[in-house]
Image (cartoon, rainbow, N blue to C red; front, side, top):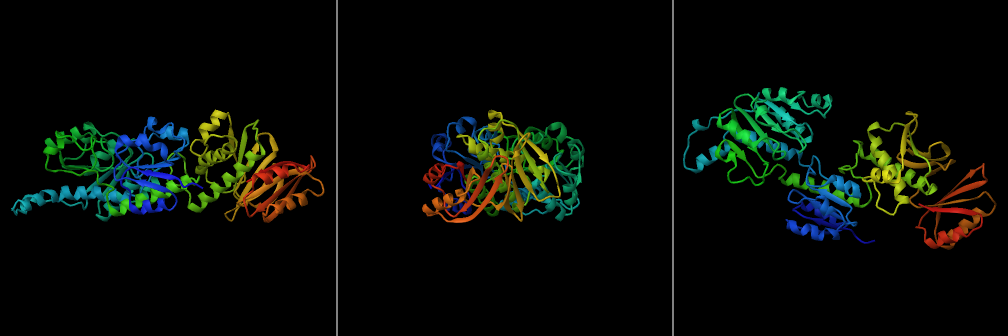
Length: 519
């Protein structure tokens, strides 16, 4: 099998590169010239970018080899998600891998401003020594307002609790229990948050709220504003205006609406503005974490799996064991069902039993659809573009939930046709085929399986076993099932070797055999 090729356009931690090189050929650049990316992207199965490169629609289309795009960081603002989803390209990122680093960078800015670190440093270097001139303040007992309570915001709260600050936060998408667990007071609006924030720190994605002069003016006199999240989220002219009037004590920016900022950037004139060149995730530990998480996600996606850090598939928050079990079960039941029903003349029903979390349903639906369509279409189909492809094919998948106390079970059938049911249970994390095309069976699903649908007549089993043996293939297990209504039978063989096309051809020539399927 040909090893995949991976392009890394910007510096990535060596630990991640080493992981990738175990399974792929990797071309890694410290900084690939931007104009070269569209010219060479056609040669790669996966591309990993950071902040310097953009992947718009015009760069992504027309490259059927490209399967994975990764952003080595928390956001994917520079990747056209809609186009990637349409094309079945998995988009990977590294959420939370640099959360500690980003939160600590925010506190580095707070402390520098409150304790006059940067001003005191310049003072000493100039040969002076005036302690009174740089009398500072403490974080202790100050009120911290956090906008955005995701992984970075929660890390900021954890650090603030260590300083014994009073912490408030605004995030309409986070449950009350999360705020309570972090000893944080939830604020329902920004209008409520800013007036109680002696220090305001922003930790939202690009889609977060825009903070302008009107809101900033409601901060307490002597407040500090910090942004280490995304440039342009806070009006920089407004910050300069409030610094001019003395309303703000200081500003700390690690990100800017234009990077690097222009020579006439308004905050350059303020010595109490601490400005750093987008260093939030730039620690050795964060770089390693981002590199490893990105590499692991890319490898899994190239192998046809659904990594937990994929962006354009609604991956549920399950444990790795729970996720892996349901993922495997969904793929198996979808693939078997699709082999049994090459023509789908009715909506398909996905029937779920057992303790399957409701938040897993959107992902399960996409995974099952991908497994079905991947058997029937020549185009690339995966969980990323399954909904798009299903709509194109006019394929409808209904979901029903049944006995919540049963073993976890996934079943597929054509609506109104219970005799078409294929069912897989997930007992002790082992997928077991319980029913196939309405016929009851019971076998652990093997890595390699050969199935025949044949007349329920003497001698068929022996003929199949003999022919498989003639091809030098060992049979691990053999399972039989009957369709009483039409005198047909099913036989499933667990095999130790892959099935050659010639064997399938020879099996189809046996008189009593109607269909041969290979899994």
